[in-house]
Image 1 (tube, rainbow, N blue to C red):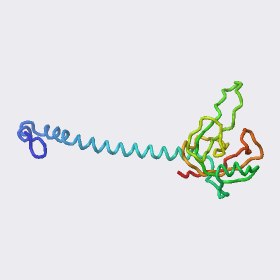
Image 2 (cartoon, rainbow, N blue to C red):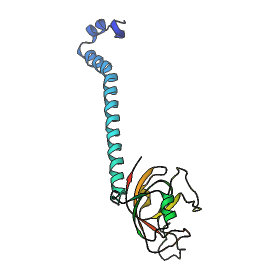
Image 3 (tube, helix red, strand yellow):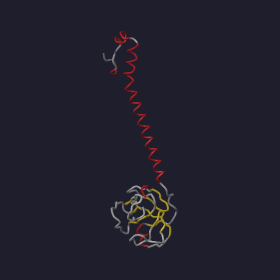
Image 4 (cartoon, rainbow, N blue to C red):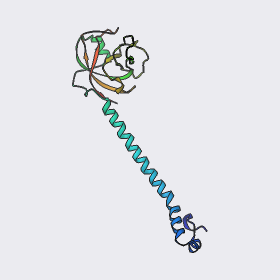
Length: 180
């Protein structure tokens, strides 16, 4: 019954059943090949779909331009110089992301800090706002566009007022680039 390469020798059955067996035999021998081909094509198309979805979601989340060509300072240099205003570039890891929770309509909610991220010279995630000279709060809308632990170059603007216990005035985001 078994022939070359594991294919069944069915010549004696073919004579008895005629064309009906040929159709069945063709279907039986082609199914594994067909399923493999269809499975590979499905995997390829699903992969392409998710790649496109990921790229489009990254692009739609970003709502700030690329970093500008300002002077580059480290986080501790920005804090030590105690700038009261100006535009600068700074590099750091995103170690904390904060968004003010939504307040239901007609509810009395406590005031909360503006949406922000904390960046650091070290890649250690933070749970609190007990910051050292190597960490900095940057205020802006939509902080969810950043990834924890990723390093970025930020273009920042030091504002003329202070709303935190930090020794430096509030800092607002102007633009950014992922460094990697």
